[in-house]
Amino acid sequence: MKTFDTPLGKLQVEVFGHASVWFGIDGKSIYADPYSEVHDYTGEKPADLILVTHNHYDHYDEKAYSKIETPRTTFIVSQNVGRVDNRYTVLENDQVCTWQGIEIAAVEAYNVNRRNPAGALFHPRGVGNGYLLDFGGFKVYLAGDTEPIPEMQELPKIDLAFLPKNLPYTMTDEEFLKAANLIKPRYLYAYHYFEIDTAALRAGLDPGIELMN
Image (cartoon, rainbow, N blue to C red; front, side, top):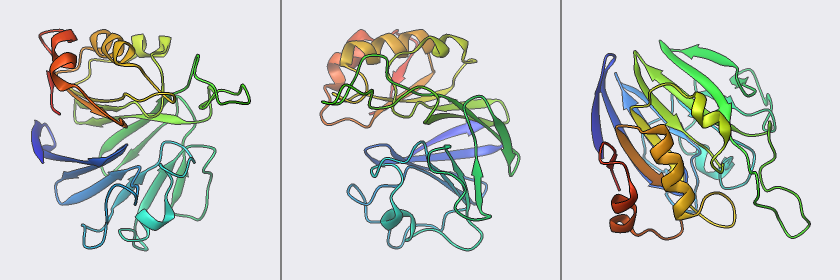
């Protein structure tokens, strides 16, 4: 677990594996894409907020979130998850909401080149979300399942970024480095990967970026 200073207080971060991340701040627990095949959520802190980037089984996993949800849990989800009940807020790309003083923006996350055997993009444009969380000026970027895309150039200054690195669904190592060096976060996690060479990635990163893996 790592801790980062933000204007809203200490932000605790734990990566459970795949695209599953936990954030703790001011006694609140925020989970992104909890996934039961990489972590058993039994006994974890109850979720105040669950972020879901898209409806693929390894991101929207009922078995995982059933261990942490409560009647008071808020879900912020992509349009292809949809509004399941009154706890769900659906954000489309470029829409913004505020939860417990934290501004949350849905940003684009999609494939440009990566396709399934039938020829369809794994993640079509405008369907899934990345998320930009603003903790009083400390900005966290959860890229979701994406390749390097032009919209990354429009991101504000990012303090902490999570970028995917796996084929055939998201980025090669070279594309990961391209995206990271474009965004230039202060702190960077590679996530959603099958294997990783941290030494090689660190060697390719702008010296101002600290790789947290």
